[in-house]
Length: 95
Image (cartoon, helix red, strand yellow):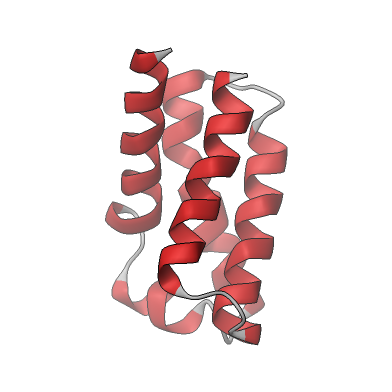
């Protein structure tokens, strides 16, 4: 379980930061296509690490919804955004 937790942390960091360009970070809240690209890139490290699993679909959908709330509607602040992303990933990939 601890090993999977470490993998989830690294997958999140790679998908949400390393694979997200400055351009995507600035435009994903204003452009639906850019948000879809970001969410796809976010899921890529999870796919590479855990393989093709049914958890990828809810991961994608939850990431999409959370980022819409944060970027477009602005009702979620940055720390809450990150906490929710981690909780979702842990629920989907540990249990």
